[in-house]
Image (cartoon, rainbow, N blue to C red; front, side):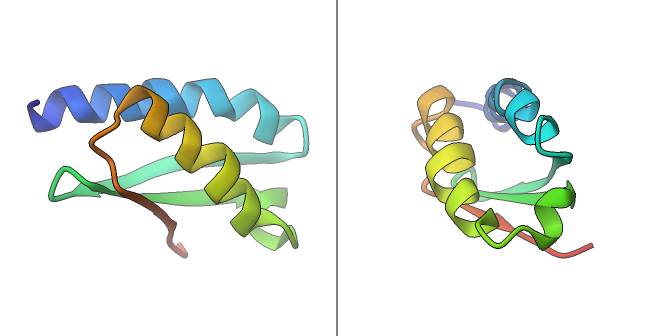
Length: 80
């Protein structure tokens, strides 16, 4: 699969998870996709200081991204 296709699928996944984050005052944006297998995202708003943001990242964001783009192996959050 081409990098552009992977990016489109990741963006669709982020759009799917965004309403759940927004309901708690947060948001998420795509920073980069490296080697077509590592996704870097940045959390915004209430998600930055939330004590369960790493659990949200793994069980919510990473699962949703992998559902849309199974070739993604890992999702990490980066600071601004």
